[in-house]
Amino acid sequence: MKQIYELHADVCKTLANPKRLEIINTLGAKELSFGDILDVLKIKKANLSQHLGLMRAKGIVKTRRDGVSIYYRIVNPKVIKACNIMREVLLEQLSESNKLIGKIK
Amino acid sequence: MKQIYELHADVCKTLANPKRLEIINTLGAKELSFGDILDVLKIKKANLSQHLGLMRAKGIVKTRRDGVSIYYRIVNPKVIKACNIMREVLLEQLSESNKLIGKIK
DNA sequence: GCCATTGTTTATAATATACGAAACAATGAA
DNA sequence: TTCATTGTTTCGTATATTATAAACAATGGC
Image: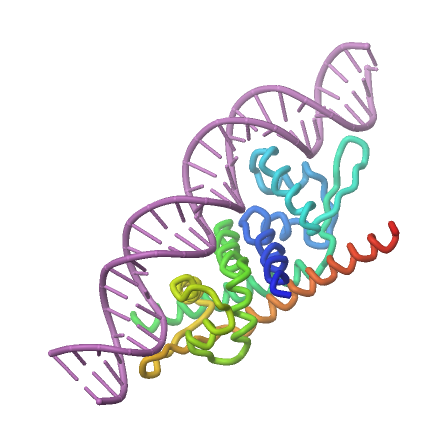
């Protein structure tokens, strides 16, 4: 059952990108259209579509079409939870390095 | 403050690899020597050293030398928690696809 | 000092990711 | 039907990641 690590890494990889993290953070528990997300991220629409397409393929987001626009939302709220915990790890790392800087001064 | 997403992605990237996930899972809250980890992962020692070196550089693990061997442990237990939640996401995804298979049959 | 053990570093090659440009597709309105 | 709007797909290129081999470094015992 060692391939579980491959699948696990696959989930992590899907989150391990600054723009996709921003998408997740922007979406949260809400449902937003492609255009809404585009307004926040301010990247090329082709690129946003690629990121969202990947996230959809990996089962992180789901889509719903309403007329001319397509709405995205996060499938499993645990994804948001996992991201938040990782951000806490980051913030604790940063505050540790600040402590070090304080000591050196 | 948009570069927070870069840092956040950096933390995620460090976890987003099957072997590093296996290292984290093997370590857990314990402290293990390089050799101990090597016995579990069964990869080339150079490659293991690279993975551990990266994880140390990113502040995920810490080392302690005792004589000829070097001991590794996870710095922040939240890393384990984040990994566990992501594994739950994966398992829920897998059980969803199993449900689908059941319906099709 | 010499050597076996334990790990690290460097160089290189293979593979995967990310991005932009341009073409393409689906919808609703006129 | 035609057109504007909203996304998607494809292709080429640049960059990052990963693994292996081989050389190198640090420690303790003799």
